[in-house]
Image 1 (cartoon, rainbow, N blue to C red):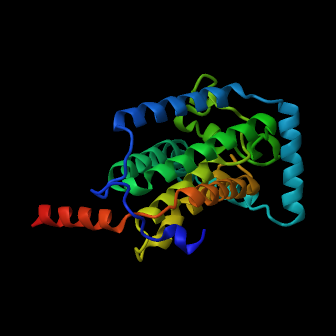
Image 2 (image 1 turned 180 degrees about the horizontal axis):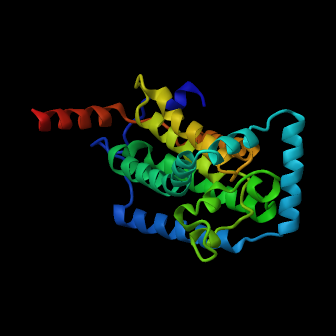
Length: 264
């Protein structure tokens, strides 16, 4: 993104607060969209043979270029129960908790950047769903010999149960990694919320750790993670042309003053 996309923005109203739909309408719309996404994602099963075949091809390409850390990371995770447990809980919980929490926080605390960030998240998720539909891809745990399904083996979050939550998921929706895509979105949201913070670089710790987790648990290839990064980055560039990711500094200052007055 260009520097201008991150410059302080003018507020949409004289009060400095962006004009948005009532919060309950936003909540209903986002909730309905997420429910629809999950229903369609489950329904898009794809062909097991073609999905595994594509995964084997992708694995061959990664190995040819020596871009194949999946095996090493999976061996490390599967060799330590505590690490497998932590990675499994991270994989199964944070993906569904952090992103909505950040979206809600931005909606109420950084209203000036809420709309473009919401649009980036929605468009990225829809495009990922389209890819799942037209190009189903099996994860390493279902296609690469020696890769352990650490969640299933350790029955983390009932992943080993034939009737558990994992049984409802589309097993061939590996490309792009939505875990990584949403984690990248979280980093973008934090960067937009604090455009001048000295801790901006720390925002990227979340997608980095998420990438290590999805590779180590056998749920994604490295290229799946790269695709998630490219997806969100590309959508963000397009959205930023008409809706700059620029927080209103007066909004931040006003909130800081209110917090300071409450403490004094």
